[in-house]
Amino acid sequence: SHTSSKCLPLTSSSTPAPPSLLSVSVPGSRPRNEDEVGEGIKNSGVPREDIWITSKLFEFHHNHVRQACQDTLDKLGVKYLDLYLMHWNIAFVPEDVPAGQLPRNSKKDSATGKHLLDLETTENFTKVWSEMEKLVDEGLVKNIGISNLSIRRTKELLKSCRIKPVVNQVELSFTFPQPELVAWLKKQDILPQAYSPLGSTGASQASLSVVDNIAKKHGVQGANVLISWQVARGCNPLPKSVTPARIENNIKLIDLSPEELDELEKGALAQTPKKVCDQSDLVVPSYDIFEANHPTNNDKVQAAQA
Image 1 (tube, rainbow, N blue to C red):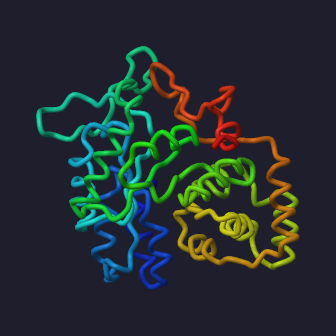
Image 2 (image 1 turned 135 degrees about the vertical axis):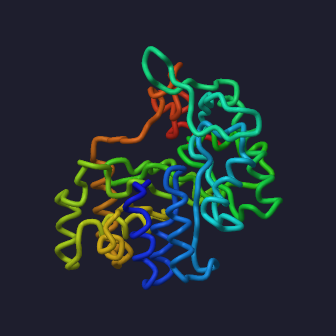
């Protein structure tokens, strides 16, 4: 998410470019910047149908799905979202608010300051999905998707859902390629969306030798190589930037040869896996979101099962 001061000029500055560029600056609007994003959309002059808007259901809104979505629509000044994501499968205990009002934050543990986990809602996240399906029925949302869901939990969702998620937005990068998850999602016809495809702050993946060598060969930046690699492996990369020039550069794809793709894939698998985003220890009680070290629930084992 972007801070309010940067969000409006960024959204507005994107408007002379192709619609695909504007769509990069709008997805992932957060409660603290939706007003600014909405103002930028309004002032852009770009037709609504040429803008792709993605927003997310946050962890303290799992029991307020309809109200949270409508709040987002009102702030953005639009009648529908193109994509609405369940941000995490875990649910936070929301702050106390008067009846009918939408919580704006979670309750915190007094000793640690961490979010209080609503375990019952977390364990029944498929019921939250059912409420999201109703948003599609009402025309408030065109597509619904998931984020940060493991293979096992996605399997659980697919058993009961009426509307299948179109995407699973997960952390995918050169140092965290998640090949089993990517391959499995593609088999299920669920698009893997890659957040942090360039690594997070301080993680300079574009300068790694295998990436840098290919970038120099094509006369581009390492970011172009990493983004093009994600596209080639069937993922939808979502690079984050608040700099218009970088946003414009990030949408420039290059044609990677089979040999280069193989080199990148092998290089990624040779990296020590480095996951950046995990809320498992940010809640009380802690909750193993990804089950990466579980003997039977980890993605590698789950991908191998029917």
